[in-house]
Structures are given as C-alpha cells and as structure tokens.
Image 1 (cartoon, rainbow, N blue to C red):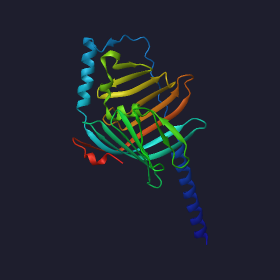
Image 2 (cartoon, helix red, strand yellow):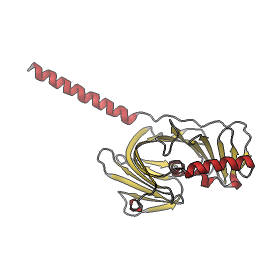
Image 3 (cartoon, rainbow, N blue to C red):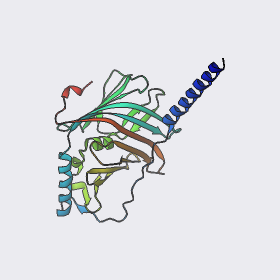
Image 4 (cartoon, rainbow, N blue to C red):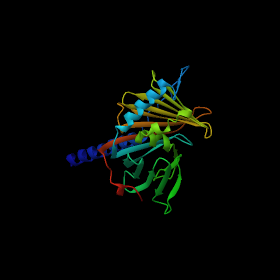
Length: 269
C-alpha cells in the first residue's frame, strides 16, 4: 500500500513537472532583436566604383547558394490586444533557378496541415485548410492564424522570403540603392519604404524594413553564424509611431537538404 502511495505521488509529480515544462516552452517570450542606429554615415551610390564593386561581391556570394528543402519550427508572439505565443511545425522548399518557395505549416500537436504558402518572388498564393479557394496576391504582408484560437497575425512575408531565399541582390537597383562598403551596409530607398541590409562575410546578417505607408518597421536578424539557409531567424515588427511591439516571429531550421536541382512536383496545392 505504501509503495502504491509513493508511486501515485511520483506519477503526479512527474505529470505536474511535465505540465510546467510544457507551459514554459509554449509561453517563453521570443528574444527581442534591436534596430540598429546608422547615425551619420557616408554612403556611396550603387553606380559608383566603390558601390558597384561591393554589390558585385554580394551577387557572387548569392550565386554560390543552392536550392534546398527543410523542416523547421516557427513561433509567433502577439502583443495586442494581449501577449500570447503559438507555435507551428513547417516544411520549406526553395528552388534557386526559379525563385520558387513553398512553405507548409502544420499543427504540432495533431500534425494536420494548417496552410500552404507559395511564392515566386513576385506573387504569393495561400491555401488554408478552412477555405477551399486559393488566395492570390502580390508580394506583400500575409496573415497567419493560430489553429487553436483563430487569432490572426500579420507577417511581413517579403522580409522573410528574401532572407530565406537570399535573392536580395535583385532588389539592389542602381536608381534607389546606396552602399557603405566599410560598414557592410546596403540602403535601398523605394517610394514609401526603405530597406537596410547589414552584411557579414558570409552573407546578410540582418534586414530592416521601414514602411511609411503601413506605419510599421520590421527587422529580421540571423542568430548565430551567418549561413544559407540561416539556422535561426527572429523577426520583430513594431509601430513607427511609438515603437510598440506588434509581433515577433522565430524560425528555427531543424533539418536542411541542399541540392542543385529540386523536383518541381513539390510546388503546388
């Protein structure tokens, strides 16, 4: 009888510890990444000798990348109207020659597909499990939903796409690009928005996006070593008005298979 009593106590204690551990995993805040302060920096035009040489080096670095497929975990933290965190599992397929990227998100508890997102760098197509019709839009923000609560989160998809595909050089048009080679900074000023790239020896370290039209700023930062695709990225979205956090997104790659040629059958719904 005494043995059974201690067995029940041990089982209850184990269950209680598991619940606490599970809750801590679910509710742990995503790390805050900061926006850099550029200060007073002299930039060169992309058309200048210094600027064009630096951008050519970035293009060659991107050309050395390959197509890949992989599995990842994604956590999304919302701050309004209240702070909460939800997580999903994901698969990603990226074809370098065409720029095609497809992401499939699944419920981690039941393994059920929640949504698929496809992009060729110009347009985005989204198929969710709850809607039969495929949503199509230009390259812009997308909305992801927590499968358990239905809460929606706005995701700055272009920022994530360009970092996970490393096709940033195609945005560096001479008419709107400035370069600071010594500090490894590329500044792209387009109507209504500004992109700032901070580079490292092996590629892009972080990307900042400032949109006056949408009144938001976002930063996506590679955590740890810069490699392709990055193992861990954190995206932070804040209001331009008061700097208040709106969302944070953490993507952790679990497995990556690089290949020169990806079977096109993986793309599509």
